Length: 170
Image (cartoon, rainbow, N blue to C red; front, top):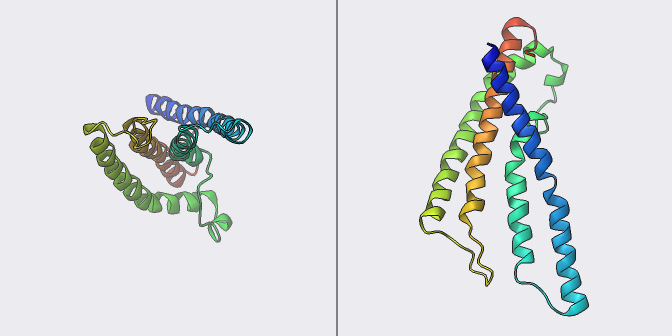
């Protein structure tokens, strides 16, 4: 069990660390936006890349932050009743409902991999003058769902352990 616990901690550290690194995207996009506004309105010299760069960066940040949010239990939860339940009962319910989580994440991972591969095969680029490649950005979508699935596996095993033994897995 020790190797599994170490693997859980690695997954959680990667997801937590990536979320903290991704938080740095927000000030970067703010700087890009401020630069664009200053160039456009103060110097009448708008860029052809700032808007698209901001959109791509925010998109990657949004999709890749899912595993971080799952690790910190920040996803939407229907806990109108479940907050009243003891932790062991909640763990059993979470174990059962994880079926839906894995169906959802699995389908999105599969679909997004196809989406990425289609982009990769044609080396898709933007139709703007700047023409950044889209396929690296699109790769972050299946990557995000794999990270989310791994975090879901950790949560499922922790929930199962709590449900069966009544003790949290450290």
